[in-house]
Image (cartoon, rainbow, N blue to C red; front, side, top):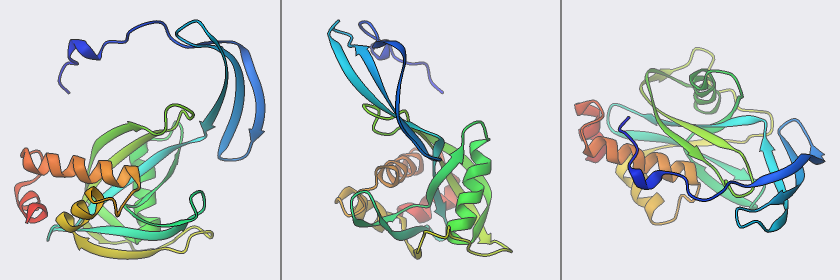
Length: 205
């Protein structure tokens, strides 16, 4: 990774808070804690933090012909139907690649010969501490155990050309932020020669 430019250095004073905070809500996936905080400006502030108990995982599966796999499912929070790349949660402290392999097999029934980590991201960092890791996966083949969705998931799959998915995401038809970020990252890597040549050419069409 290249050295950070000077303009990326932190400025000002950080947020601070008094005491450990008050636990407001807790379940197997998240906690909500309220803090008596002090802003970088010195002003007091009441701050609610959502702590995620899992690392967000994203996998962009790319076939040799340049098509990718998207999954479609209903999402609760926005009461919306979402087409996105395979995503899920990985336990904190577990190698993200292990979690990514599991997520790909569970949601798509696929396994991959080649994996490359291409993204580290913060999701909604004003109210949550959720972090995400994204992988490109290629050399795809069916898993022996097949598709094994979670009991709350009703997932369908679509195999679409990479450029078609990228155009749809840029147009706002794939609003899931990890899907958009991963498609743009993969496009940049393909254009810059950072992916295997034949696969990059197939992706770019």
